[in-house]
Length: 574
Image (tube, rainbow, N blue to C red; front, side):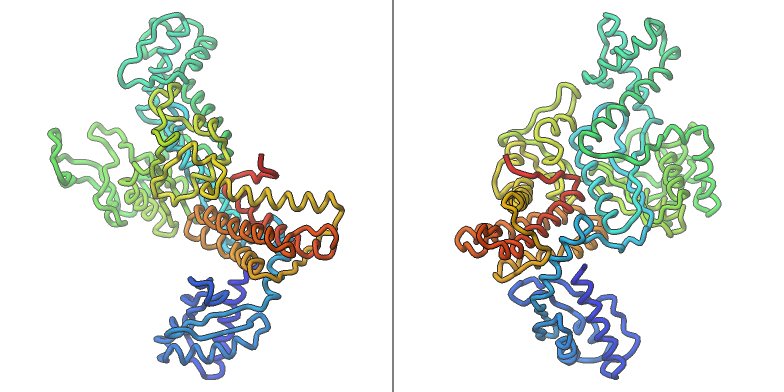
């Protein structure tokens, strides 16, 4: 039940009736017509801009349209009051029975309340994390992992078919560095001093890899040139790092559907096929790039290169796809990877990158636009930095990782649920401060606690009702203004899912849950002063049955919202 969608349908049907009666011209576009909560709750339950957006194409005064539309809307039993405001907005107050029905529907629908068919099973590929397989995930990857997983959950709730995908960057020079770093730990496992030269990975996490290499290969690689061991150690260490990364993601509650190896693109003809597809569209050519803007690098010189004409699809400059020595640039396999995505018949693509990849957005968008002839939209989301603090002081780096704070450091400190919720309390492209003390404090200023506390209160009420053997009803009895406020907030949930999914913004769910929890806590506190508003009445089973419905509906929505965020709702606070 999406009451906002239902009332918009009523508005559109009423506009059609006005067209049929000659009060409006035919052929009007109703797309811009909205029905949404007013900015000021004192103005009513909903507001529509229908008269304002149709006035110009209808060649009429907006108040003239609004006056007729308002009178017609009043005939619907769901509309208690309809008023024209300002230049032509229409404010609506709904009949109280509507809010009773919303609460009953939430209880009846359970976890599926608010889920939408908006996505119509459109196939969406969400690529996220995609960290180099050279060590454990760090806190920056954590934000991308949480955002990507929550966005995937949100899209599924809105009716999309989602594939969660991780692109393993195992084809570049960084995995050779990993192999050399692991080899030093292999030497260490044999009692030799490791030579961790500058540029190698110093983290302790590779000690176990060195031990495992010793167990598998014995001493056969000792004192041998890397031509004898590089390939095997690289493959072994890469797989060990991917096992570590999968474990990190599992600790955060993230499971990928697909792990795609960059290495699989090399020597398979897939890079060549992707570039041939671009060449067939006239987008590959031999040419020279303009000199870079700003300070000129000392070693820069114009040279003939194989270029992708990405400027024809919105990029700032054309991009090289081959090096001067004939090898592929780092961009070439990315073209092939996205060609593979397009070839897998996804209807939409979403790439989630760290903030340091901002300069990469236009070329990737140009790639997908060119390969799909503009038929497959790509949305690139950037996740900004997370600044870690403990008691107001910057959190120190991890010895285990060598150079950074790991995902496991953060999860082990406060738990996956706290990490996930807090990382979604800001929009993905806004910097975020994560203070270990503040995210675990029990106060209204801590959103994760405040929302979980609301759910725990709901569960405590239900447990008490069951212990007393009192009846439970799905049909609420709403009398107080604060009860109606909570019911109205519940009614926003289906609309919120669609808006958040459409805009790829799972942080909206966290904001909404905090607002719902705030309204519920306000009702709870009001019941402390007004006993008739309490949910459990031991001496009045009928009153309890009616009152218990509202917190039950609140619990349904909070549980569903936390599920989208990937957070487990608590049964009681300790």
